[in-house]
Structures are given as structure tokens and as C-alpha cells.
Image 1 (cartoon, helix red, strand yellow):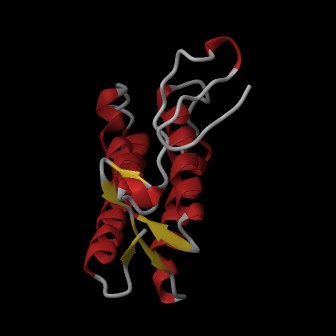
Image 2: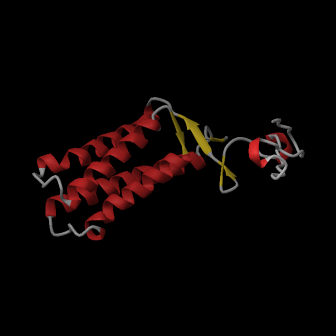
Image 3: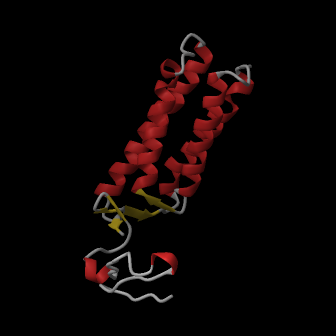
Amino acid sequence: MYRRTNTETLKIGKAAGRLPLVLRTPAQSGRRGPFVRGKPMRTIENRTEDMIPNALNILLGITLVLAPWYLELSYDSAAARNAFLSGGAITVVALLALGRTYDWEEYLNLALGLWAAMAPWALGFAETRGAMGVHVGVGLAVAALAAFELRRLYVSPQARSV
């Protein structure tokens, strides 16, 4: 069992000699850092005032998680399950973005916000006005904050590619 780098064959276990594998260093491939669809990720170090959108997203996510309790929804309903899952995901992504914001976090928040806004119709609880109002309000607010953060990532002079 041995391993060679660059353009030599990788031989491990039963597949010895069967897998021609080209291993290149990042310098050889011309790439720098992690890539999404061939483009470098954008990032920005957050200052204290830059953490406000993420803090608002955390509050919005917690609001959505707590919505079934103060709206007195049945815990096995689609509205309650979606509130728990969507709100929890929004909160976790916002917590990840507190120190340094990456573009993938904001794209994910944008998708989560749009999902939360359209979930009442997609999951069939649009007739429950309280649940629909919370989902649409929180979803649109999260999507707007994510769009603001994405604009900041691509326009701000402090933003850089990694």
C-alpha cells in the first residue's frame, strides 16, 4: 500500500492499480481557497456595527421558534413544525455569521427567509392567520437582511475573496 502524489497512480488495498488519479496542489490547479461553482467565496470581517443584521436574524429566528407557543398552535401541525425547523435554521446560520460573514451563509439565509415566507401556502396553513403572519413577516425580514448583507459583501471595500 503506497500513495504517490501529482500524476502517478494511487494504489490502496483491493483497488491497487485500477484508479489512475491526478492529484494536484492548489498552485498547480490555479485555484486559491474554497470555491463554489468555480468562483471564490466572498467574506468580510465583522465590526461591532456590522453584527446588527446577524443579531436581528438571531432574534427573528428565535421569534419563529417560539411562535407556536404564543400562537397556541398544535405541536404536530405543519405550521409548528415549519416554525421550529425554519426558525432554528435561521438562528444557527446567523450565529455562524457573527464573527465573519461568508456569502454562502447569506445565500442560505435568503433561501430560508423566502421559504418561511411562502411556507403557509406550500404547506397549507395559510388559513391560520397568526401562523401565516409570523411566517411571512419573519421570512421577508430575514430575506431583506440577507439581501442587504449580500450587497455589503460584494460592494464593501473591506470584503475580499477567499
